[in-house]
Image (tube, rainbow, N blue to C red):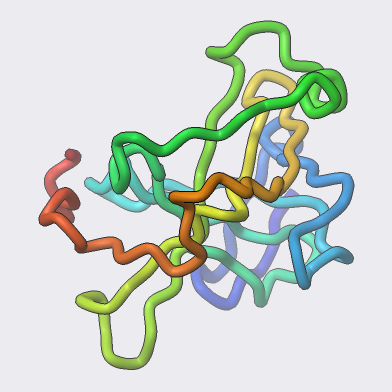
Length: 151
């Protein structure tokens, strides 16, 4: 399938790579089908491009690179819903916000991570109510991010 996107222009999508968020994303409940797009030499970041609305794409980051003690509790209901058979079947990303002031003030939402079973492409956004999770956690808080170098 070929889709025309606002950010990437025309891209070819392998239907086997479409990630399905059965409940959509918070504030975007009507968008349920997405693909992950790599960002050149920056493996800690991905774009989550909507198939349902090609105008919508979210910048994602690997939260474990940002906050090394980050933790997401996958309860039994979520594991069953996503049909997770092993911990290595799951990848987790958080959404990034880059304000008008630029990358130096970018944040990521540690409260609402995206949990993806990469084997069957089922996914869900969850709410983590841990005390140390912050909705606007600074990306560049501890000089832990390296852009353009792959880690």
